[in-house]
Length: 504
Image (cartoon, rainbow, N blue to C red; front, side, top):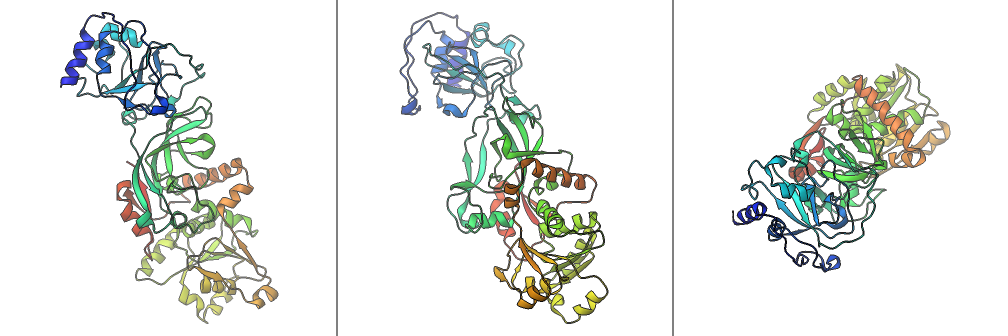
């Protein structure tokens, strides 16, 4: 309590003036040290504050709010954003002292401005009766007391969300980071990151949930078509809630739910500051798991069903990897469009359970790879039209079997290669059946289409979710700190449950 007593004593003394020379903190980076010049009088409470341990302000990565410009005293909420009514400041080198509850225990009624000495309030430019964050977790910033030019304040400060008092706690960003490519279990680490400032076109997002997709694993391994600069935060998909937005942001507001507009954003973290253009708003009344898994698999499923063949209600579609995230989305979206599906899966101990679940989603038929190769399958297709569209996520023999059962002139679209084997098509299939082999990658589709078209796709899928026609795949929620367990589970064979990292 020694420091708290010293602070309280300084705050309660009369405001005698004296000449002092302010010196930079030894913790301040050399590149940002400035020699302070002796200036006008400094109150004892200011001297008392200067005796507390200082931590270095993270430079331009924070938005400071002056209580009284150019007087060397500022107030700042512990969330990293200015208190309401404060304006911006730049050109000053701040030093910070955090007044936590235990440090300010000597102050009566710490959660209300009226309990603080009048001179302190006047110097801070805060009126009596102004509510502070609760408990008293504010930062008093002492700058070298010499007049300096400051930039003109922006027209509007970041707007903040009143969602929860938890948002006012000091930010401690945790993220899953990999510094080089390799086995995810060996290269991914949970680390702390510094939260960037909210610029005029930026959005501060608190992540809620983020899945682990096969593409995430491939990206960490270095086996993907899009590789971010290292070190990188893992995760390409997820949903977050907007905490604050910059003054020029118009598309989203505090409290909205958002998902990434493109891959490589790095969603395996508790919070981050993104540009507005990197995000797409989604309804906050859809299930959390649906929102977290919306931006990749359902989009892939919808586009493949719509873009390669002019299918009509009653037409058939055949696919392998039918229990995958894309496969389950194909079943549901096809059913909503009036299409019928033949769904191929690998044989497994819980086959009947899986079959029942896929049929509950709308699957017409569920077959194993071995059944599809049997001679009796010719009779199976005698009683129904052959599929005009095949969706391949496996490759190798599995893709060859899909081609064998396609209708003449049909198309097989490859969007994955789980078997890590090439697609093999016989010459006769290409010549005499005129089959077409195509590929699909959602990232390329986004490059070829406008952000407005992708947003339209997202809203179309949200409509299906709202009508109960599209649900999230079977998911297992895992806290972020247990990421090792989630990564291991996501790489096991015959896993029908998608691992979703939760950030709470």
